[in-house]
Length: 201
Image (cartoon, rainbow, N blue to C red):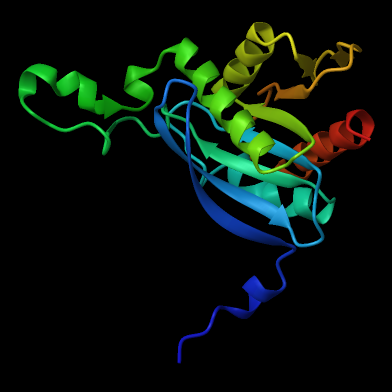
């Protein structure tokens, strides 16, 4: 009989593969890491261009976030990977080939806002009271663009330590890429958790 690996039993979260829609209906996927003790705040982990929800901060942050009592939602934005064929658009002929493709090679900044609006809407729908967007690399551009377009969002840039003090529904955390995260995972996790404790209490 096949059993789950023992280390899965002691993880502080439950993982769900979630399908959701961007604001314009584009189909997206995410991994929702829900702490077993419950959580009222969820952090959307926004990956960089050509990355996905299986690597980088989207991979290493869910564990320390869950241990600190926060859910995380690692989303695959439509710019994940370099390029891929869309499964929701029928392939008819090569004249329309561009329309069945998506990924980093077809990146448009305004699409990121639609993707993140869909992720926020999903988390609100399932009952999270507070939503924080944490962007890494070009995910920071998307998170910042989201904050600029949404009057309900407050922007916090770690480098400048500034926060818009007005009460908002969503908060945006951007980690500047002065160095890559490899070898600095604990530092990145500590910065995000410190922010959450200070601004979502």
